[in-house]
Image 1 (tube, rainbow, N blue to C red):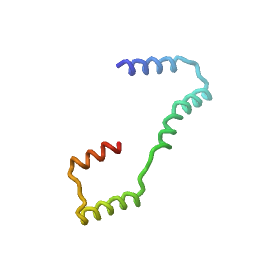
Image 2 (cartoon, rainbow, N blue to C red):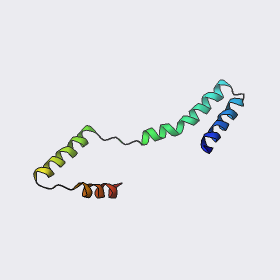
Image 3 (cartoon, rainbow, N blue to C red):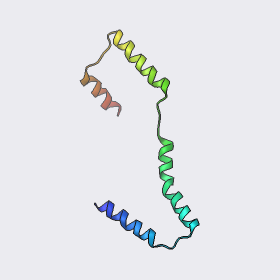
Length: 80
């Protein structure tokens, strides 16, 4: 609730300013700057990586190297 109220106060303050078109564009760019950096930092898994993971998993299954759900979740938690 406090964050929402603070954001609303900030928005009201910004609206109260007498900004030129140039200043509004500058402000918009500054506000969006952080989101662009976050988008650039997003990692994507390629189709080849996904297929390689599936292939490795199938080979493990055929070779009898499987895990229980609990083992899988422990490994998952260790990686995250």
